Image (cartoon, rainbow, N blue to C red; front, side, top):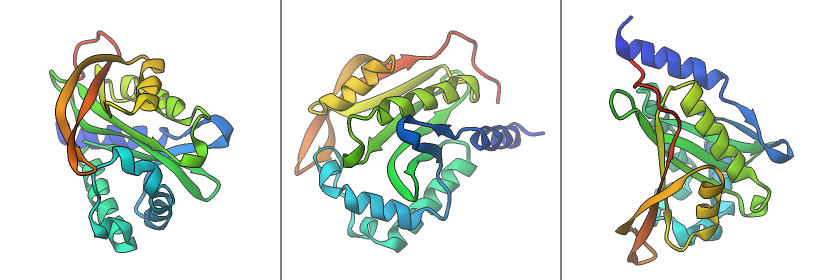
Length: 201
């Protein structure tokens, strides 16, 4: 089996067992192509909550067709083995998302982490639990060495989540993202998962 085929089989097999139960019975599970309506509802519901730390979204982002196209892109990245995007789901509601993106093997053997939590779920431990679950998945199932994340300098709550989850700040990227009409700094965090040699994929 070719290296890329093996990577896809491994990633999809791992995705099948990636679902985890978070505090309060919230399910962390991989996104699928049918999630567009629930994702749109979640983003509309949290538009003001996310605005201070998210780049400006195009108008199409706030439409069902826009979310379907976005999901098509995410599914393509998952097929290529560079992304694992998950929803946090309570009953029929998406109450957050978390992802491992820019997954790389070989000498780098790392991924970038992203996450957000519904305004109604803040303070319930969902972000920390989701970060922990994805880091375990990155270590045990993908065999990665390192996970990196960035947070807006003013997003103290997110920095607490990362620190609580074993991340350490290793720098600050100046003028990193254009948010709310100006370039803003982001703090950079990393978590070293293990000292194993790179996984062969």
